Length: 333
Image 1 (tube, one colour):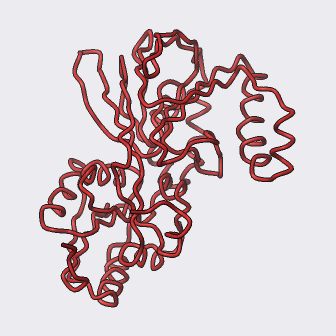
Image 2 (cartoon, rainbow, N blue to C red):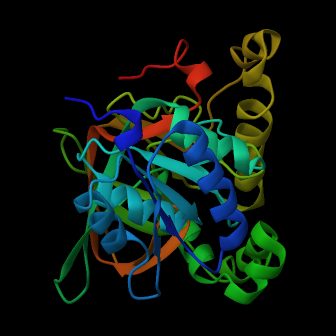
Image 3 (cartoon, one colour):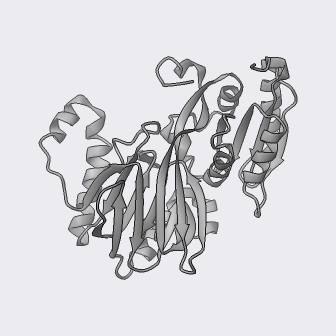
């Protein structure tokens, strides 16, 4: 039996480095009172626990919704703890990425609107990506991701990003990281198995497993990716020199980001040829083993070097709050 509005309570899991706590409390408490909810519980993340333990505590205490206030790492930690619980996550975007919020077209600049969605919005089920990482010492870790997992050059770029520079200039810090990451050879050979297909070898610069398709700066990397289709969209980038990188730029920025968004543009795309520098695939599970240990990232955060990765989709595993006026056009519970 559903709880009555007056009996409902919210919890906020927040990163104190990323948010203005007093301003956030003012908006949340006002909206909770207006919506007739009980007193909100507050949980601060730490370096040792970026949000998973706090979220479990909130769920065990009976929270009806958990508001994630922080960067992509906070959102991922909260989502991991909410997996398959049925308790919805509400996104209060902050930090530099906001990757899931961007892919769900949620507001990135209006805190009162985001908070109102947490208390009055509709519930939407989305998929989660699950990844099992094998290290060189044979140890294994398991994590979730919401947007993308990557092995190779993109993960190397993230590992090379200066955290102090990122705090000052946001995503522009990746320009410096790209320059440092492109030094030397970045080609690697991987063996991979997609679903029940036979294992294959491929030489790449990076391979990305996508639950969503968009990146910051309105870059549509995986144009067919859907957050609730039970499938991964996977892309292998394998440029050969400057010309190869230019082909990738044209495909991602011009074709995906501009042409694909209009009827006329889509007709023009029908006359273009696919390029070998990008290889797109779809599947429910992929196993990847690089010839040497490689950097690995989840949703823009570095997870160190790995010797093998197994990743699969957990369909409809996470409930997300979306604005109530979108319930008529998006699949909800």
